Image (cartoon, rainbow, N blue to C red):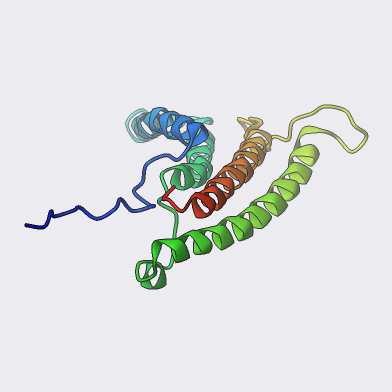
Length: 185
């Protein structure tokens, strides 16, 4: 009687592939609690505005900053969990070896894109954190509350893109090693 074997695990099972991915997933799960914070302060704003006729000056910008930060972090989280967008119409119908080659192309293109975006975001961070004459000053929103959220969010975008560059490099190395060793990542 032949032994029934389970199919080999997919190379895209949503599991983190390295220590950086594991760290990102843990941090992302912890940061997801900030969505509750955003809901709570938004509820506070509604009560203050419509029950007490005393709107706040800080809730809207704070909720937008927190939400924007979480949205930006979602990109590296999706990469770490291997839940990013791919064309499954083709991808799901090719061999594991071909999937490795497709992943390598994906990682090279993604690395180039993330690298260029990281450079561009560095330029915006520099402009948001320093005056043209070099003096340190954080760009602010210009509202009555006037927090430095624009400068901080630009820094978050830059840091996240740098992390994404590192992720692409690590994933690219792992795909190349998998091809050389002829096994799944």
